[in-house]
Image 1 (tube, rainbow, N blue to C red):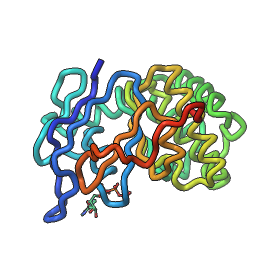
Image 2 (cartoon, helix red, strand yellow; image 1 turned 180 degrees about the horizontal axis):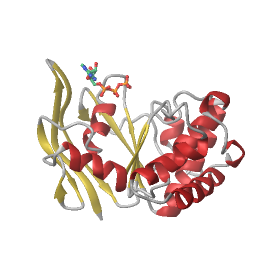
Image 3 (cartoon, rainbow, N blue to C red; image 1 turned 90 degrees about the horizontal axis):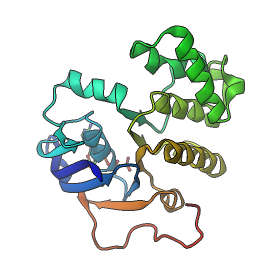
Image 4 (tube, rainbow, N blue to C red; image 1 turned 60 degrees about the vertical axis):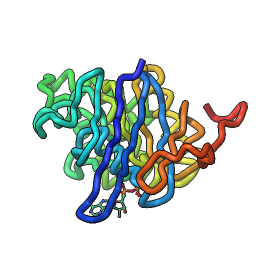
Length: 233
Ligand SMILES: Nc1ncnc2c1ncn2[C@@H]1O[C@H](COP(=O)(O)OP(=O)(O)OP(=O)(O)O)[C@@H](O)[C@H]1O
């Protein structure tokens, strides 16, 4: 069932066009990789789908409701509850420990301290970084930081996870390990994932690849990656 859809989405920054009419349907539980050359509009697409940016024209529908017309407050509430967002650099709060960082979205949503910490520890464990629970980001490796950021993005058990090059700052092996965990946990929870990546190998973890070119979906079928039988999926 389609639960997230964009219709004719157009977005420009001043005179620079970023999206020129993107139409995209994402089914519940689907893992979609968005690929394409630098500057083709991937981040803008993700930001519009996640309600961070509002498109200039077109519409974004979430479970049958138009969300692009919602107020900033309503869209940001959606991002605290049903949507999760993960960026290339995890953007952990430097002053907080891993467990405190992961607990933060729950505390903001009104969960009690004890319960939020317990959930944070469970998610750090699931991401294989329980040992850094009481460590601050400055004393963690890049991979540990990104695993914590992934735990923080998933701790609210979002319906959709938007990930913008989540492993782009990691070495290939670590990036692949983090991504394998992210995809496994998303599949376990039936979380939909929209994942931006430059790397064909990473796109291979997705159910489907959508390639953008010059702000539009490329239907030529010449994506970066063609599914390989027995590949990493
Ligand atoms: N805040 C901004 N102000 C002005 N122009 C912008 C802004 N953000 C993006 N752009 C422009 O919009 C276009 C699409 O950018 P976007 O970041 O969405 O592409 P991308 O495919 O994610 O790129 P990359 O792979 O390099 O991150 C580019 O031409 C970019 O220069």
